[in-house]
Image 1 (tube, helix red, strand yellow):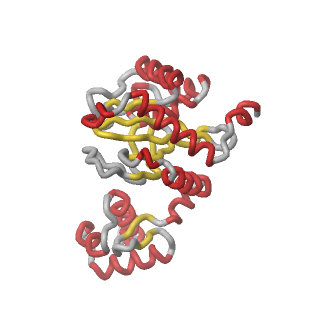
Image 2: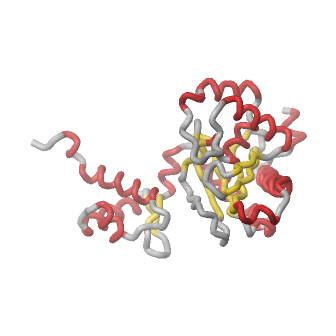
Image 3: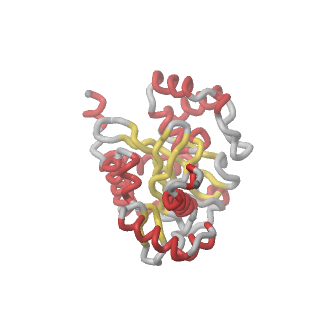
Amino acid sequence: MSKPHDSVPALRRAVRILDLVKSTERPPLAADIARQLDLPRSTVHGLVAVMVELGLLEKTVTQGYRLGARLLDWGGGVTEQRDLVTEFYQTLESASDLAAFTVTLTVLEDTDVVYMACRNSATVLGASFRVGMRLPAIFTATGNAMLAEMDDNAFREWLTLHPASTWPEPLTPNGIRSVTTLVREIAEIRERGYAVDDEQVHDGLWCFGAGVKDHSGRMVAGVGLSLPQTELGRYEVSQLGHMALALAQALSRRLGYRAAHADSV
């Protein structure tokens, strides 16, 4: 008699395939999946064919596989997220001055930011961003920008739910370590309108972020502009911050946000 956990091996293999596809920077081929998971090629070909049919995977033009749209449907709020990503890319089309930067779109989930969209620059950043990646919000420009968009009550509630004792270890020596530092940072972001990640995620990488609002004035996302520290001298820090803020405001307008209307509701 087989053990209970072996009763549905195909399902377990399918989940392993999804995990692999999610964690791989380039869409893997079926042969790559078979090799990395040590599965028979015939088994993998059969599984991925069904997963594509069900919308769990999508086949790319390079014959690799990426996560399918049906997974987003299961995640909830899929319409809003698709609209958000679509509007993000359309906003970038008219922002030619941002071609030198890696531009990211994130949403806040508890203590993490989740990357929903990314347009990488040709400049070597020393760090890679990909859709689906998660990072601790307190170390990121977009995460802190979204926290700063909360009102005082909501921010205090967030701190209560996520005390400093539960925070992850900093990713670099510059990472925020205390509530006092975070509160001070949030106050500065609210005053100037944008957040700065000064090598908190990766040594040698800076990011400038701002919060995005929907038609009701609700904070729904953050946008970030990333560049290597070696390129920082070409700009004023405030210039980079205001570029991120301008992008966030442009995306907010595309989502229907109108400051005067939202503030009067």
